[in-house]
Image (spheres, rainbow, N blue to C red):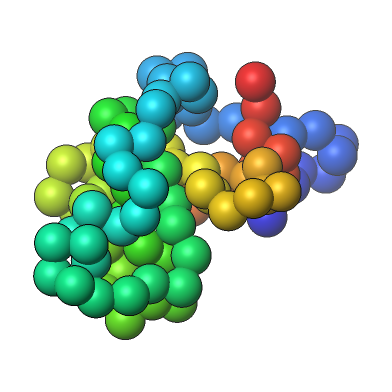
Amino acid sequence: MATDDDDEAPTCEHLAGANRHAKPHSNGCEECLKMGDSWVHLRLCLGCGHVGCCDDSKNRHATKHFHATKHPIMRSLEPGEHWGWCFVDEIGWDPLPS
């Protein structure tokens, strides 16, 4: 994850608009569930609650969702993981600032 020289969490203008309390729309990747396909890890869009599969999954639905909607901030939906990512600025946080 990206950090700056002061060891503070990196910032971007998109983080302020993220809904850190977004509720997942499903218990799995929405598109993979519809297709009957599988995924590796899940990501939650903090713009709308869409659940998509990660870039290690063959379908990469979380990234496709960003390109389709321009919702910039997502976070991991994996148990025990608290990191987030801005697709626009390519900045990551671990943990995602509250």
